[in-house]
Image (cartoon, rainbow, N blue to C red; front, side):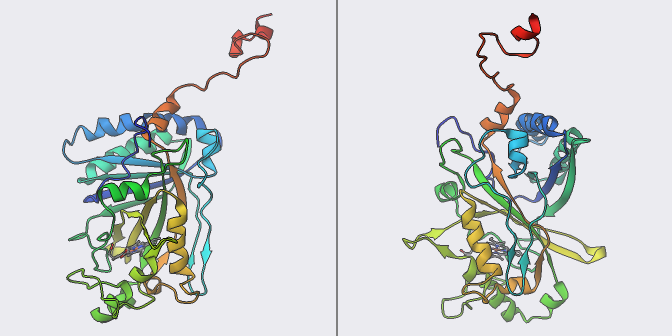
Length: 331
Ligand code: HEM
């Protein structure tokens, strides 16, 4: 990573509140979307300064179909449309998404204010296809009741896990989001000891099950992956619970950052297809993935730079080749 490349706030910590906005850019809305992305760091500062110490951050991601339309130029090499993963029993669907906005703060009002500014700027140019408001649930627990995020890498290991060193995309990242809804009746019908075998950790203490106790189809077993040298391949997760008590919606918004999407994709194949195939993640017997999308996360510098008008293509006739200054226009 060069000194000039400032990553977006992908390394931010879990907060009390978060909003996840996924939008599609309408035909003709590309310039508006680009202008917003260029102004995003300024908008975030404007709202965040009103709540000093409450840590408002916003990370923007760009989907494969939107990159040529909104950003232009070659996309980073790992960017592609999210591929549906169909196992024998469970499927991870691919759903629309051109832009992702991941807003985090200690207070929901800061997230909400920034989300309002973002959607206001995109009005008439983009369509919000998913909006999820996530909240902290006791001591970083998901709605299944387990502490979520414990094994996230920290410090230098986190930076190495999520920041790309691809030439031209140094300091960038990739992010996968999936919205899961839980079958709480089925989950609550399981004895706690059985729930612990689904997740792979103790529910109250959060301690990992021993190798002897750990089932091959637990969530922890299937999301622990290593490279050819035996080194663990890690991602950074910022999952948040969400829900609506009155309508019986209980969910986990999964969001995982990585330096290359293949790390997350390998975990998803393990979960949905199984390792070995058929040995799927038991968490899926109680959780349905209803969305799925992949985005590239450019650096702050790359987004701020979208404000600069594109350099004019050099003309072969010696004119400036800019609008009315073209020689043919002047003659
Ligand atoms: C670990 C919950 C989906 C990747 C965990 C843990 C919990 C949890 C409770 C154990 C504590 C921890 O280390 O954080 C959930 C829920 C999900 C979900 C409720 C959705 C229903 C996913 C997905 C992925 C993933 C889709 C990746 C594609 C991981 C990884 C770990 C983990 C890498 C750490 C494994 C280890 O090294 O011990 N998750 N998770 N999770 N999860 Fe998930």
